[in-house]
Amino acid sequence: MDISAGIQASLAGRYASALFELASENGSVTAVETDLETLGEALRESDDLANATSNPQLSRGEQAKAVEAVAKHLGLSALTTNFLGVLAGNRRLSKLPAMIAAFKAIAAAQRGEVSATVTSAHALTDEQVRALKDKLTARVGRTVILTADEDPDLLGGLVVTIGSERIDASIRTRLNSLSQAMKA
Image 1 (cartoon, rainbow, N blue to C red):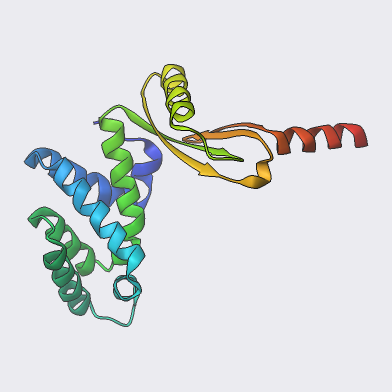
Image 2: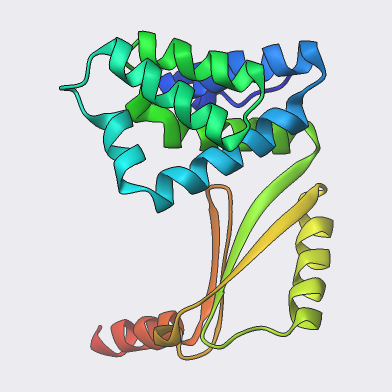
């Protein structure tokens, strides 16, 4: 399994890597990934759940009971539920959002996918998104999962981020560059 050193170096990455290996052995990567997406959504929507996972005043046992109840309510798999129990026992529940992101990155890499974000001044049409996705896929040689955002401050053009690479072809940046050149 090829996991980037950056992911493995972080605490969240080590836990996510271990969970991914267990899920791979059990043939349940997709189920665990779905569980983690559900859990991540619940963390974003419920302040109580977010507080329960990050409150240092709660004991390990109290956190374990809380996440076990949440896992049962959300219908999470046994592997994901056990993983949450380990996190509670090790006082690592506060790192859960980072672990979810790391697991998604590992699973996407295994499928040969790479995430990219395109930011434009105005909403892109489905055809424009599809064309951009095809060009980026050809450029990086892997399937690109594209997320489109809007930022009216760009004025026009695009800013594309693929991993740590950023391609800034926005009018705002061009105007700033021109302004700096004229000052010199």
